[in-house]
Structure formats: C-alpha cells, structure tokens
Amino acid sequence: MAGRSFDAWRLGDRIAHEIRRTVTETDNLLFSAMTYNPQPLHIDAEAAKASEFGRILVNGTFTFALMVGLSVGETTLGTLIANLGYDKLVMPKPVFIGDTLRAETEVVELRESRSRPDAGIVIFRHLMLNQHGETVCECRRSALVKRTPT
Image 1 (cartoon, rainbow, N blue to C red):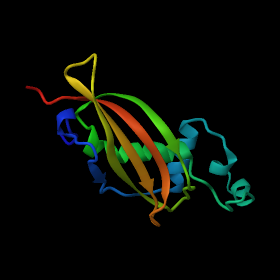
Image 2 (tube, rainbow, N blue to C red):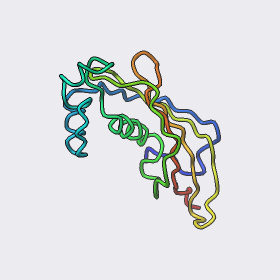
Image 3 (cartoon, one colour):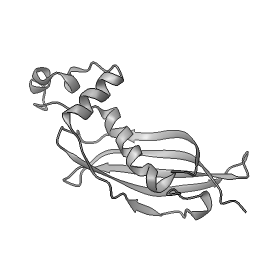
C-alpha cells in the first residue's frame, strides 16, 4: 500500500511527487471532448491564436485532475475511504501544450472523524507547478482516510 493511513500523517508533512508529466495536444483535446467542453481556447487553434495568449490553453479541469492524480500514489492509494471535497481551487497561471508539470503536497490539517472511529480526515494542500517553477494550480483536498488497524 503506497498511501499513508491517518495515523501516519503529521501536520506539515510535505511531498514533492516524483512523477512529472508533459502535457500533449492529445491530452487536452481528448479531455475536452470527453467532458463536452467546447471552449474554443482549448480546441480551436485559430481562435486561440487570436486570443491574448496566442495559442491553445490547456483545459483547466485537466490540470486540476492531473494534479490530484499525481498525488494519489503517495497520499491516499489504498487508504482512502472518500474524498470529501476540494476547496480554494485557483489557477494563477495558464498551462500550455508542451508544459511539463509536477505536483507537491502538504498536510495542512488533521482531524479525528466524529462518525467513524476507524478513520480520520486529512486536509492536503496540493500545488501544481510548471517547468519554470510557477504555480499553475492549487487547492485543498479533504480526504477521509483509514486508520491503521489495531
């Protein structure tokens, strides 16, 4: 099991996730098509070229999903009961095709579960950074995580 149980987390724990991902045109196009997102900035090179960005912008929900996905292996794989919510989602910089992204995670809060003695709530702060070290996505994820069996 790669993820950590509730008891193994400490406030302030940090992880720089090793897996990096270069975003491709196919990633962006398929994600936009699968989610029925017809935004021309994501799928129309000519419309995107005429925008202030001058090129296609990667779908922000792809960036968000990739950020969470890159974190799962080292945070909640095999220990997650449920994701309870995502808060304070921001995307301060755009992502472009060809950008290489990496994720970092910090534990910002730990709470006992009032309804589940076999679990606790971990609040993660996830960051996605591009190849220039600029934050392109950030959020807090509340996860209900199993305790270590006693």
